[in-house]
Image 1: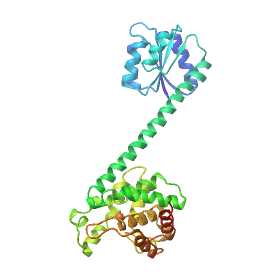
Image 2 (image 1 turned 90 degrees about the vertical axis):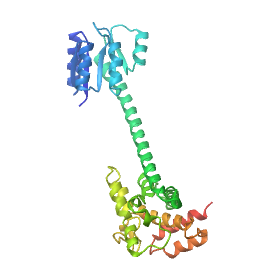
Image 3 (image 1 turned 180 degrees about the horizontal axis):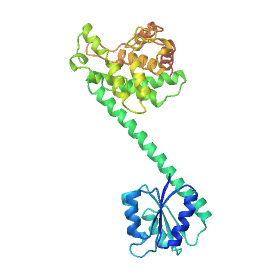
Image 4 (image 1 turned 90 degrees about the horizontal axis):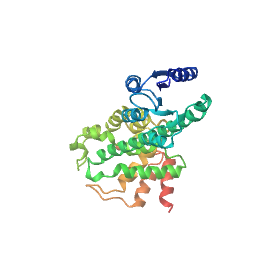
Length: 316
Ligand SMILES: [Fe+2]
């Protein structure tokens, strides 16, 4: 319920506003002067304040910045007995959302003034959502850099796999969703949990070491799965080492049991690994990499995904 505080030294005005807003479902609180208003704001943290300018003691223009400094999201509408343009400008510069001049009609208050406040709130919510989204993207990038920083030979691996994955999605004519991007970037985050002695070992891994490396999809699933809103990304990460024919790990899923994003990661990841230098071998030429992907069509990889990559690689 919207909490509204009416601050006016005139009791009649307070009561009128209270009745009007109560009937419309607001939770209404009252204050008769500036000090009482500040105490009430502290206590109830209202969403909206109607604040009279001309009051004995602290004036509305003195109370306004005190409210806005502490609770910047609280909307304040000034009430004034005189249409004083200069004072209204001052109130706006101090953070007031709008003002009304006494006497005013309640209909005007409801339809015009409040609609303006709601429009402002809506804009702020959208901006806050965009900020949050931006922070999420930055957080994923930070994770991503943490993974890539483990091994100088695979630096930028996640970012480049992400670019290849996006091109595959374009080739498949499917939307490039945020889940797809995040899972491409974070697919190997579980490698954070693999010891350096295994992860960075230049020689062939023993069977035991391979078993430890194979833990990385599960570790990644557990890391990312703690984040609300990343449950599906975690599931994709869990599946990115599965093979189309069911011979992958960790669960041996096959075909469409594997989320299609994970099937894209499998191809993008392998293609990038084949075409990058490693301490123990040089990058493969493009044609050879393509030939190897074709060979694994239907076994390791989803044929449609391999074909999409080949298509985008051969298009300018
Ligand atoms: Fe992986």
